Amino acid sequence: MTCSTLHISDNCTQENIAKASSVSLSSLQKLFRYVFDHSVNEHITKRKMTLAAEELLSGTASVAELAMKYGYSSTEPFSRAFRKVNC
Image (tube, helix red, strand yellow):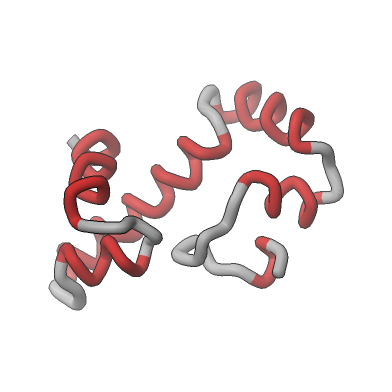
C-alpha cells in the first residue's frame, strides 16, 4: 500500500511517500528540506499533531485514542510529540 492510498493517521513512511511520488528517497528528503525547511518525518509528525489538536479541541477522542490512531505505542511518546509541535 502506498501513501496515495493511506491517510496520515496510517503508518505512512517517507519511503512510501517517495515511492508514491516516483522519486528517490534522497530526492524527497532534499526537496522537503528545501521547500519546508524541515525533514519529511518532521512534516508527517507536525501534520499528525495538527489533526490530533483539532480532534482534542472538538472533544471527539481521548488522548489515548489519538495516540493509537496516529501510530504511537502509548500516550507518553504521543504527549511528547504533541507538546513539541503545539507548545
